[in-house]
Length: 339
Image (tube, rainbow, N blue to C red; front, side, top):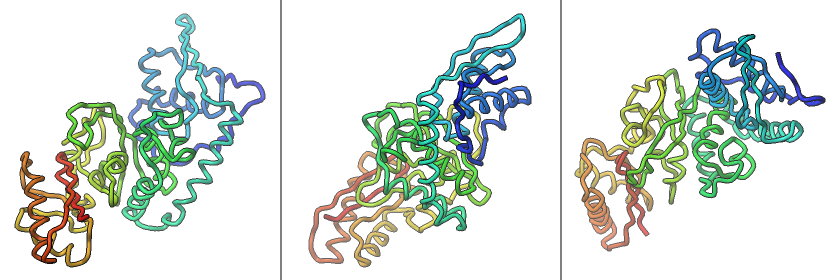
């Protein structure tokens, strides 16, 4: 039973068809609760009547709704009261915006998503790459943690967001493009080798029937001279180098589909690195990005890469030049820049 706010009804065609992984994890009774809660939130209900369930179970289902539905950007939390005699409980959602504001923002978001129309008929890989690059080229990480930064409102309205807002936007874009994806809530260390673990959000995406991790936020923070793809289509074993998965999620086991493997930007030894850098210099590239595979991390690995980069430049151009190297030790990705 839904108790709607008088005279208000969220246009809900704001809900968009997409993948609902977290809904699929629930048992049948929990699915019915999920549907009732979602229906109540979509219609901006003041109260939603539910079967009596423990508060932690209701909280989990509420969180699953937010993970599955990025367009529910306006429901922040809820209050719950229980009538144990009648075996019922009442959920009172808390909304961040008025019904009119929600409709206006939802319509703006739906119009904004048309930027992905150009790749709607293309392959999964083309769609994924377009969404990834669009985010890197148009959005930035919000170090001020503004009001919008945790939801899709951040990217759409202020072009900035934290990991949660970016992951929500990425899922919404994939929903629009008809691709299956989900938001992952876990922990991670930053790519600058800071050992501290912090709460983090990223995505798992299905590409041509196979599942991969995609962390657009980390690639966004790594971007300097060129776009970075250190966290594009990673299997579990690679993402776990600097991410902690704290939930029971689908297994991502396919290897060799990461961006650097796809585009022959993987180097297996230092001799091969000499040839790789040489070819790029002859092609006129000033920024060279590659993944070093099969060589264990050592504290002097970046110095060795700089030395080879300088030697190759002298060999080809008969002069020296200043070299910058940025280094992601967790994924063994290097970006060489010749000034």
